[in-house]
Length: 599
Image (cartoon, rainbow, N blue to C red; front, top):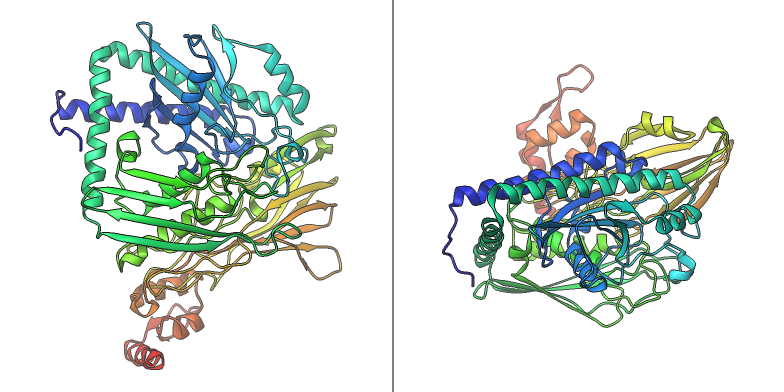
C-alpha cells in the first residue's frame, strides 16, 4: 500500500503530469511530420514515452499499447551495457527482442536527459521501420525459422551518438544493408529528433520546477496512480479467470496453429491482478514467438481496456500487476535464436483478445468481445522498383484497410480499430498519398455489409480492399492471422467474420490465398483482401431498434439480418426514405426468436 500523504499541491501535481504528456505529444508530432516512410508519417506506427532515470515508465500519452510496456527494460539495459559511461549528448539504438524490445522492426531511440549532472529521464521514440535488412523485403517474416533466416540488423542498446554527433560506423553499417538507405536515414533522424525535442523540454521542465520538486512529483505521481489502480481493482469481484484462443495455422510449420491460454487471478482484498502466461507452447521455429515486451504489453493493454478508461498508464499502476511466464515459451519467453519477427501482431493480437474477453466472464457490463485480428492485404508490405523514378527501390508497410473493433458493454466497435495491439491509435494511410509515393493503384476500399458481430452492442464491420501495381512488378507480403477463427462475441454477442485474401488475374476467377502469403504481382494483377470484423457484446435482441434502423440506413446491416438476428421489422423502403420501425411486428418477431431458444 502506498502512503496517501503528499508534500506537493495536488494542482501542481496535475499541472506537471499534463506537462509531461504535452512533451510526449510534441515528440509525437515531431516524428509524425518529419519521418520519410509512410508507415511512420501516414500510418503513425510509432510511439513516444518518457522513462525516469532509474527506469520507471513515467508518461506515454497516446503511445501504442503494444509498444509501451518494455521501454523501461530497454532503458535499464542501456544503462547496464554502458555503466558509468552515459553522458549528455549521447543517444542509443535498441531493437533487441531478447532485451525488452518488441520485435526487430521497432527501432527504439533513447536519449538520456541530464540536469545538474544527474540522469533524470530517458526520452524514448520507438518506430516501426519499413526495412531493417531482413532476408525478404519486409520487416515482418512469419516463416523465418530463426534469427539467421530472418536476417534483421539487431542493435542491443548500441550508442549511435556522442556529443550530439552521429557515430558514422553505425550509419554506414545500416546504409550498407538496408534496401532503402535514404528512407531509413530520414526515419532515423525523425526518431532521434523526436527524442532530442523531449530532452530540451525536460531540461526546461527541471529548470522551472527544480530538481527536488521534480523528484517529489515523480514519487507522488506514481503513488497516486497506484492508489487509482488499487481502488479500481477493489471494485472487482474475487475471481480466477481462464480463457483460451488459437492462432491461425501456418502451412507446413504449424498445421493446427497455436493454442494460447491466459489465466487471471483477481484479488480485490490485496488489490492485485496476477496474469499467468506459463501454460503456453514452447518457442517455435517461425517468426511468431512473442517477446517479453510485446506479450506483456498486449496483456497489460487488454487489462486496461477492460478497466476504467482514464487509469494512468505508468509504473505506479503497473505495481498492482504481476506475471508468470514459462521457460523458452512462444509467449513472453522465447530464447535466442528463435525469431520474434511478428511478435507485435499474430500471437500478441490473440493475447489481447482472450485477455479482455476473459473479464466478460465476470458478467454483463464487464470486459469486451474480441476484435478483428490480422495484418491483411491492406496492411501488407509492398516492395519493388518504381519506374516513374528511374527504377528506384521502394519498401513500405501499407495501412489502408483495417479490422473491425470489438463491442464493449457501452459502445459499438470502432471502424478505425486496425488490430488489437494498437486499438485505434494508428492512422489510416491516405490512398492518394500512397499512390503518389508508390506505383500502386487502389481499385476499391469499402466496408462489408452484414459482416459485423451482432449484439446489444455491435462489433465494427470488416473492410475490403483491392489493389495492384501500375507498372513493373510488385511484391506484396501478407502476414495475416485472422482468416480461420472468427473474433468471438461476449455475453451472448455473436462472432464476427474472419478475413480472406484472393489473387485476381485477368480473365480468371479470384483464387484464394493462404493467410500468410508472399505474392509477386505483375501489372494487371490485383490483390483483394477482406479483413475480419469485431465480435458483438450482449444479446442482439436487446439492441435498441433505433440503432438497428440506423445500421440499415448506413448500409452496415441489411433488412434481412435486422429481422433474422436483431428481430427488428420495418415498414417502408430505403430508396424513398420511408423506412421506419414497425413496433408491433418487431415485438412479435423478438418473441418468436426467444421462444425458439427455449430448451
